[in-house]
Image 1 (tube, one colour):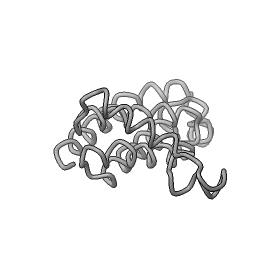
Image 2: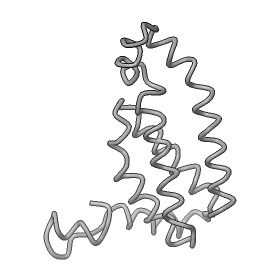
Image 3: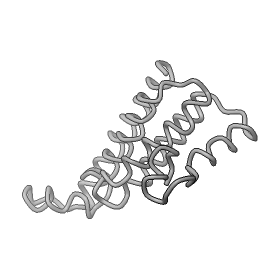
Image 4: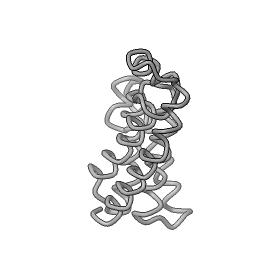
Length: 137
């Protein structure tokens, strides 16, 4: 329901792309550049990944990257990859205790301890990836 190309296939002809409309409205009211858009996309990816799977947010951050990246002329693929890293790295078995249960069970570690030990390296990696995406986008 975010992309104007996909929404008509689901909702019928003339269906709006709500996420794209929101992106256009945001661009007209808030001056955006690559840095705040990249930070927003990685934060949305991290929040979407907190369900524990890490893969549920991939479609959301990809569409969001397209909706916000095109109007500012940013590299949409780079922004989408950044959001996907935020989603997978936060929820795909690194930052949520219910996402590391299988790993903790095999290794005999406490899931909360494993999550605490993963937090700093994952956040540093996301910060470095966000900085690199800002520089390259």
